[in-house]
Image (cartoon, rainbow, N blue to C red; front, side, top):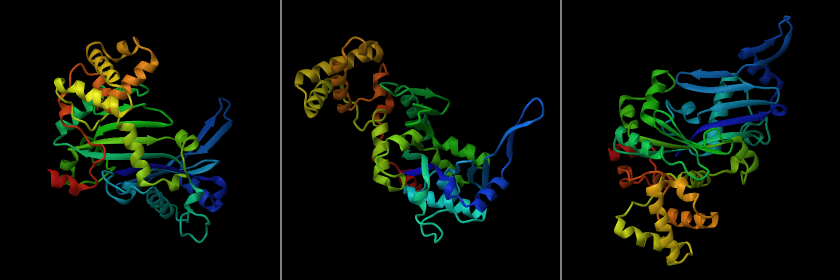
Length: 347
């Protein structure tokens, strides 16, 4: 797993005037002129720092100096794999920006700033996991499966090779896509570097990406952003995508009733609730999720849904008329690949 994107904001009072002027002078100006030719307002444009394949955006505003980009691409030639420590990722971006701006920005160990990295605010972090499938065709099959996973409060938007979940949410949103075609596009646009072997191996990667938005950081984060650990992010990622991708293989119909009954017992319900949840699941397969949900009370639906999730069902199963082949090859969220060597061993 890796942190694929960070947006960091340094409050204006912590930005030395010389540093702010340096950042502002490197950027374009956006101006608004009235019909009479008077200047209404102007602001500093965003500067995209490029160095070979690296790219980082510096945006000096009246209230913040903002850095945004992929920490992995600042260090590596591409962002297929990278670091999973948020402090290290932030430090890589700050050092890169400091070098470009020819200045010293607040960072741990800097004699000019006490504290250092704690002066920054984080308003976005993308937590990404890569899953190794057998081929690009299997990755696309998986995406088709995930595209039918709408249910509950999760809203799905489909594009050519990407599935978005709750797209545009300022809290949490998800994305699933094929990394191979995405890496090929980045290389073509000179946004990344990759060897021919890496291009081939990337075609096996299904990527699940959780975006933690500014509202979550502001209102719901249990601790300061720089105190969040890899375990914290991994649990958030698993909890978010667990409703879309399960760990349990779909069993034969003769065994499914038993599976539901045992699942009901595990969550504290009776055998009768397990059988009722099984009948509800059969109705969903025949009539569709919305039709069945509208026919029962909220407490009953909540109980049955809890049992179905415990039995290994996902929102994608609720929306499929039949079990699709992808369900026979379940992705285990606890076992992503962490580097090129992991894929080479499985290839």
